[in-house]
Image (cartoon, rainbow, N blue to C red; front, side, top):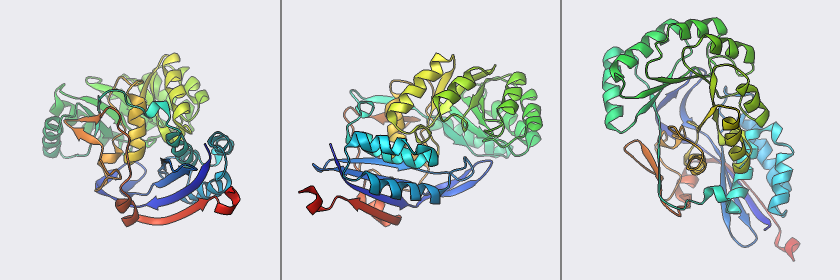
Length: 363
């Protein structure tokens, strides 16, 4: 199977509500969408959403990576193309993943085959801060079918613990809580925060301190009454093994965009369990394409609420047949294979570039 054409696009998708993290507030997503076509007309898609502040990657760098490698791999066998991209993935793991997953879909990767209808529970972000608003949001989220809430913290340890306690009281054991600092605390504030936590109903505390400060995160884990989950520093099998050696780091969160493809992601998920931890999967900043791929992998690897809920945040969907979501669950029908809505993509496209094999060169 040879690559005949690669089309790159940047699309801008406005969000229904602002998505607030400790390091950035998003009002729109701007993923790179990769379309790979082979010499027989088959098509595969990939997505790479670089989130500034989450890592050292930049959107300009990711776009440049995709442009350079799309030109280099056109005309190549798909296996050779993936190897060429992987050899340089360190320059932009997210961009490399977008290219490689487009090729993996083109090749009909077995992880994307859904043999029977599967329902996957998703968590929901929890946004309210004022006590009255918290009570109303708890009831609304429960009525929508969600049973796992994600609470963002990381700016003010004292205010954060007060808010978490109010949410615990309002949920009264009816929902599981995941707390995420998105690297927002320094070690002292993170330790102050966890020492004040009542562990009732709290599943985990995610990424207290900077991703590069393994020592600070380990010190927080040592005093935390709930398991710590590492996220941003988990990008390789070596990172998984390192996390497994830290006491009270009971979970690792993996995202497709950090692992360079479906095959490598599946290997990493297995490695998390082999190291005595529980994997959590999903990118809250992904659109419908990457969320679908993560959901497909999750059908055989995950035992908890998925975090591949980014597709619910934009005002519109990328798929002609949108992912099915109801009562807090994502449903994957047997045999489902998505098609992108080209009208939506064109309407929200802000940049594009096409690389193709010349007809004369194929003769």
